[in-house]
Length: 362
Image (cartoon, rainbow, N blue to C red; front, side):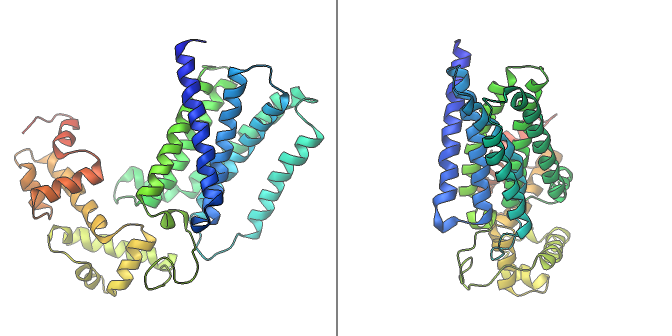
């Protein structure tokens, strides 16, 4: 075994281990349990088992056929887990599991358990390595496509860049995109194209996916991403529920229009009550919209507009200093501007400028 293979095996094994631990975290942590968190745990566990079996069979050939059966069975559940996680993350916190979901998961579980018992891998190796494998990938692709259709508005919003994605939308898009990449890296070797890619690419990316998932779940409010219901009075200090989905779209549109057209973000002393007054809603309702429905604080929301405008100025007007740009977009000090820029763009204004094409240092 060459050093490169050893590195891939190590990364893959760590990825599988982290995925299993993280899935157990979602299963067992009662405080943050919801339909979405459970399905996210199922997704991570399924990917982890698929990776773990691949590592085991690669490092120790000649294992019982049961391990291959477990790996394929786990792959059969990845697609449904991704799709239903995305759907469940959009449910209201107090909404139970729809009956149709229980039926679908009952059928899927029955296929895995009953099908595995009646036609085990050991007795039907050809059927498992051909028909069953193609069924797994066909079903996986169908659910990923369904997930893409579900997130179509978010995908369009991401590519058009007319408005900024909130943390919840970013996380959903990350989960879908990550699984699409893993799917492709597993599918390509199936057709004998770059046969080593299945091992080196997909499992390595799965490890990155676990870490990224953990990062996002702790950077943003977990309750907002996973739609967690912690009982009456939870979610906000006042115990009020989220704004209805139909009202959210209307209010969000009015909010973004007011901030952009009137350039409210340029006011360094801008307060939540000022913005609420501009769009004719109570301050507490705007707070609910931002914190519970969009998953961000008022300061973060305004900073995103300010930094977005700052990036435009950096790319368009080389005569302005960074400090001047900071004052122009609404910051009353250079340090505040730099701190906000680094937090949102994860880089400094100078490095951001250097990354732009056809730009020179100030």
